Amino acid sequence: PTLIKNQPRVSAARMDAVLGVVAQAREAVLARPLLAIALTNAGTACIGFVVYARSQGGVLKVIKRTLFVAAVGTLKTVASGVVSAEQEKIRKKTRDHFLGSIKGERYRVLPTKGMAKDKLIKFMQEESAKETQWRDSKVSGMVYHDGSDVHDVIVESFRAFLTSNPLHPGVFPAVRKMEAEVVQMCVELFHGSEEACGTMTSGGTESNMMAIKAYRDWARATKGITDGEVIKGASAHASFDKACEFLGLRCIEVPVDPVTFQIDVKAVQRAVTANTIAIVGSAVSFSQGVMDDIPALADIALKRGCGLHVDNCLGSLLLPFLPAAGYPVRPFDFRVPGVTSLSADTHKYGYAPKGSSVIMYANNTLRTYQYSVYPDWMGSIYATPGVAGSRPGALIAATWGVMMYLGKEGYTSWATRIMQVVKEIEAGVEAIPELIIQGSPASSVVCFSTTPQSSLSIFNVSDALAKRGWELSLMQYPAGMHICVTQIHTHGDAATRLLQDLRAAIEHVRSAKPGEFKDGVGSIYGMAEQIPDRSMVNDIAVGYLDTLYTA
Image (cartoon, rainbow, N blue to C red; front, side, top):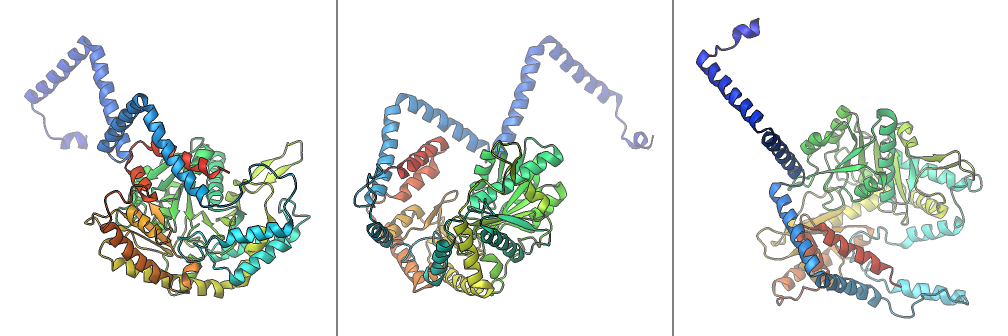
């Protein structure tokens, strides 16, 4: 009664007018019902298209891409021979690049008589000695330790445990013990509680995939979710796309801030649904090396009852030691309530050999969903913690050996030296008028591009750097280039040489003749970034992979 009493009075004339419009609409629908249904469906379709287009970057972008795909589809049909010929040119160029870099005899058939041991070892040493680019500190990431004593520890660890296999812990108890200790040492570094635990894996991709597998099976068992969704930022590693593809999950990608390159937290809030099984945060992202707002993501995960995985594969064992080295780090690990899993590559800033990573969980309940168990197999009860069955125990032993050799003091010392080089490069890039740093480097990655006012292409600058012996990492969306500083850059004057060559490369591009860089690697990246039909880029990438297996 109170609500009715407080409502404004409606005049009889106005009410009659409204009822008249309703009556006319009813008569129109009754007179032409099919038209009414068609208009309703069209309106619904338009609304659906707008919602979809907004999730894909905007209506205009979707229309342009659709028109481009239609046009290219027509061209492919009409001029399939021309398209195939151009794709073959790219494949041949890539194949010539790889095959041309290796001289000498090729082996496509297993020799009848084996090669003598001394000759074989000599051949291995000579081939390895030719790979000088990383030894000259002219690469981004790739090699994380500089050899010397750590190299000796790895080699001797391999020698001692070459035949070991953690699939058989009764036969190889030392390796079982080492793996458990590597995991527990990492749990302590990332401030896990007494319940925190984990496993070792073959690398960051498997670590991330195992986390997503655990969330999928957990959500299915405890919530009945059969169509799980994983939310990640556009800057999150592609291994999460791969994990969702392998595991039959839907990968929901949200944008990042165009200035900070952190994941858009508000977009994450909007993207969470009843089917969300996990949110992914980067600490740090591969492209720009920035850290997402992990506490904000954790708050969303707690409120919505889903997992939060922190991808620390690149941050690795560098981030935990930055505070002791004098570089503050925002909260990102198990100290943040709501963080339920975290991956860290021990083969990066743990300085272990390639093939070593750790996936950690806040509790054992979640870890059990990572396992694969088949109790009814004829061959016995089969249970493995990850993807692989047999695993190289020598890798585990080498990881354990390096961690024990360096200790917290060693890791802190190396972190200090790496960050000194990072800050030198960051300051040097900021002093170059044509360049701008993307985001705010949180650890070892410095990503930069040409300024909006510059007419220079960062891809051409990359090619000009390559002519000076450098191989840095190229980015897209937006175009950029980064260097991931490792221990190999802390010796000599790597930062000074890079900055000098970077300035020279910019001048080279500015004064280059038209078409000078049209055949460079950068030109392929630049072309690929501008193609709306990603299936064409996919074809180029597939051709690249094919050439890697040309013997």
